[in-house]
Image 1 (cartoon, rainbow, N blue to C red):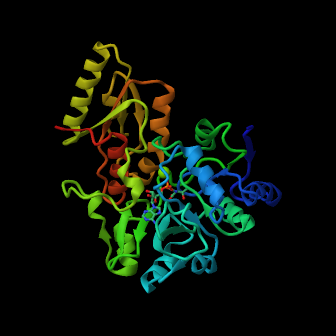
Image 2 (image 1 turned 90 degrees about the horizontal axis):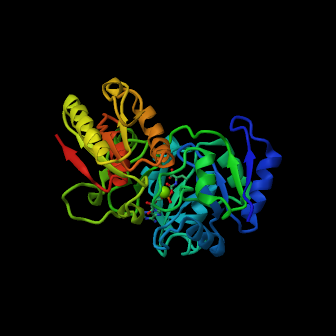
Length: 348
Ligand code: TXA
Ligand code: MG
C-alpha cells in the first residue's frame, strides 16, 4: 500500500484536505494525524474492523484498549455513562487538551475498540487538525499513539512514516507536536478519581479543579501491584539501544556517565548520552544530546521521544541519561524514561 503524506497547516487547516483524510476513516481505513500531545493512528472507533487494523498496524496486543477521541461534549454522552460531576468539571477546565478520562462505556463502541473492557477512555484533543478530522470522520476516532508498539511515540510526521510506511494509506503532516508526551489518564470508574498514566496535566492542576486525585498504586515502585491501564505494563517508549538512567547528585551523575562512556567506547560500543543545558559542556565523548535546560520541564518532555528516535537512527549501542526529577512534570518525564530504560537505573 502506498502511504500518502498530506501537508496541512495546523493554524489554518485546509478543509478540503481534511475532508479527504476523513474519507479514509469513514470507509474504515487508518490515518496518521497530529494531536497536541503526540501523533495518533486514527480509525473509526465504531467500526470493529478499523480497530482490528489499528492493532495490526501497531503490532499491539489486543487486550490493550484504545482512546476514543471526540470533538464535542454531546459525543461524550453517546459513548460513556455514569459520568460524575467532577469529571465534567475537569472536562470543562482541561478539554480540549491533554487529558483522557475513563468511564463506563455504552454499546455504541464495540469491545474490539476497548480491548474487551466495559470501560472506555475518552479524550478531546486540543489541536485544530485533530478536531476537524474527528468532526468530518463522524465524531469518534479511536487512536493510539502512531508508533509501532514498544517504540517511542511519534512527535513528527516523519516518525509516523518510519513506523507506518506501507501499512496505512495516509499521514497528515501538521508539523512538530506542541507537547511531545502523552495525555494524563484519569480513571473515573473507581470510588476516587485515579491517575493511571501521568502526563502533561499534573496532579496539582487536577486537584485545583476536583480537590483530590489518587495515583494508581501499580505505577508506584515497590508496591508489587499491576498498573490498571493495560498499556502501562509493557516495556514501552523504548529505543533500540539499551538505555540506562543515572540518578543522584548532578555532578556525580555527570562523572559516572563520563566513566561509563569511556568504558563503553573501550569495549567498542557507540555510546549515546542524554545531558541537559547545565551539564552538556562536561561531556566530551560519545554522541551527546542536549535535552534542554532543567528549568524548562515542558521543553524536556517535548524533546524526549525525538532524541530517543535520533539515537536509533545513529545506531548507538547504549545510551546513558541523566534523571529529570523536575517539580511539575518530573513524574511524567521519569515514567516514560524509566519505561524506555526497562527500569535500568544506576544510583550514584
Ligand atoms: O496523548 C495521548 O493520549 C495519545 C494521543 C494520540 O491522543 N494517545 C495515546 O494512546 O497515548 P495509547 O493507545 O498509546 O495509550 C492509551 C493508554 C494505554 O496505556 C491503555 O492501556 C490506556 O490508555 N487505556 C485505554 N483505555 C483504557 C481503559 N478502558 N482502562 C484503562 N486504561 C485504558
Ligand atoms: Mg502509546
